[in-house]
Image 1: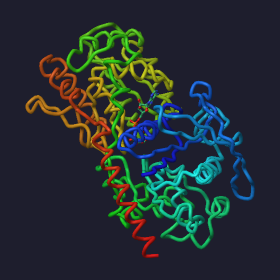
Image 2: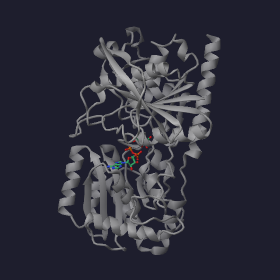
Image 3: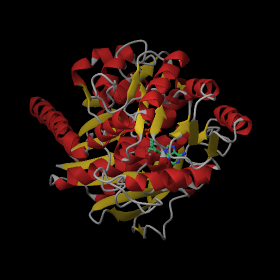
Image 4: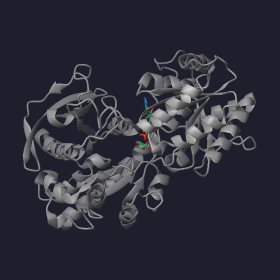
Length: 492
Ligand code: ADP
Ligand code: GLC
């Protein structure tokens, strides 16, 4: 199959969150299955052309955003040696320091124009490259209008006659909702397609709704989240749209790249270790304690957190438990960036409890690895979590996750109790500060019992969320989409 991934992030070139990990990793596994996979992302200013050996292709292409013509170039390199990645380069939209917003965390005022441009440019690029996709796989709101283009403005374009589209929701909280009056003409759609079963969404133009209405198949990143988003509690208003297409909604769990997230070979760590010999983890713990300016004590319970600063991630509960656990022998190592209110509140906690709380306001890949490796437990009490990769990475590093039972956290972490001894983490059931506090206490007491703690750590290490498990589900989904398209074309 010819598979084209179109997204706004992809590791190792640009990453804000787990979307980048998925877009840069799933293709490697599809490639191993024999598919021709290619990726298109924007050429953000922060992507280092020299480091990645980007080559400029000899095209000068143009698309229209509203009435304005925008030209762009294509750069390219190979991911993992054999997966072509194409970067759409345009100075006006992508030559700035931030990805979605400025340093203060304020979203760019022209994100609508930026991703209309990017979506149109991606379509023109595959045509220029003569890469006929069987599957166009679009991710998150930034690319939601692409399935709509394929069925409206490009419905009669022979180039795409056998192309099916997949739209994957990584986070339903970000939908790309804009006023219709200016957006419909800016994106180049016809008003006749601005209807409630198509582009219209409560009198707005909503990029995600476009993807949900027009994609041949919709997916999201865990089975539990696939069910949750069909309810008013988690659907962010999209539940009815999803319910109408419920037979086309797939929930496929993300995996991680265990060759990258591997404490045995990880070069960022003070010492390497494996599930069979985790003596090196103690050195990593000391290294983390010293980076944090904490006492170097093996018996202290070190709780790590690596996260976007966002309400989704449960920082209200985290702040609450940091205060309430000050009487315990516990240290919190937090790395995060994003929302400035959360940042300021977390930095305030660091200032009043400097010997027990450190907060690094940064996006720092090496430190993230050091926290996963140096922590005994990993805190992720998200309010909602489509899948979550951090808890899976924490498992790989033997840091036991403490999570809320929601979305992908519910699908990957099972509660450990001293009586059953099964379970790879600690799971609380309802999103409240008391429930998180109780779970941290449980984990803390189990940590005090070396025998029991080594059991839960073993269970964490034994968990396996490799892409090998999920890639077949993606292939099956792609096949279903393709067969439908072929049936539709013959019928037409
Ligand atoms: P989300 O995509 O919602 O942010 P995930 O758990 O799916 O959550 O993925 C988060 C990814 O981003 C993980 O790979 C995590 O290690 C990384 N990450 C998050 N915040 C930071 C940070 N401040 N510095 C480095 N890596 C981070
Ligand atoms: C989103 C979600 C996260 C998920 C990631 C990759 O950012 O918040 O739960 O793991 O996408 O799918």
